[in-house]
Image (cartoon, rainbow, N blue to C red; front, side, top):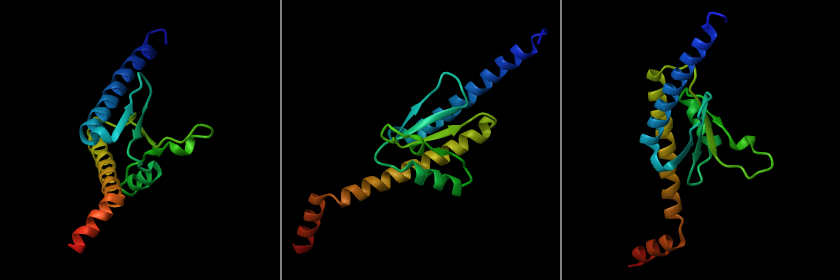
Length: 138
C-alpha cells in the first residue's frame, strides 16, 4: 500500500468499469431505444434498466437465462413501494467484447417483447374489434 499499488489498482478498475458500463449503456440504448430507461450510476458494477409498456421483468429474466445471459428482475425486490419492472445488469468482470453482444441480445429480447405487447394491446382494443367485425360483415 505504501508504494501506491492499491490506489493505482483502484484507478485502473474505475476506468475499466466506466468503459464496460458505457459500452453496455450505449448498446442497450442503441438497440432498445424508448422501450427502456437506464439508470446510469456514477460508480458501481450494475445498471438498472427500467422497462416501459407493461413488460414483465421476471419473464425477461427467464428468457435471458434461456439464452445464457444472467440478469436480475428487480420487481421482486420491492416490498412497500409499488413494483416497477426493471432488470439489474452487471458489467464488471466482462470484457467489452462480451458485453456488447450480450447487451444487443438483451435489448432485442426487450424490443420483441415490447412490440408483442403493443400488438396484443392494439388487437384487443374495443375499437379495433368493432372495426374488424365491420370489415367481416361488409
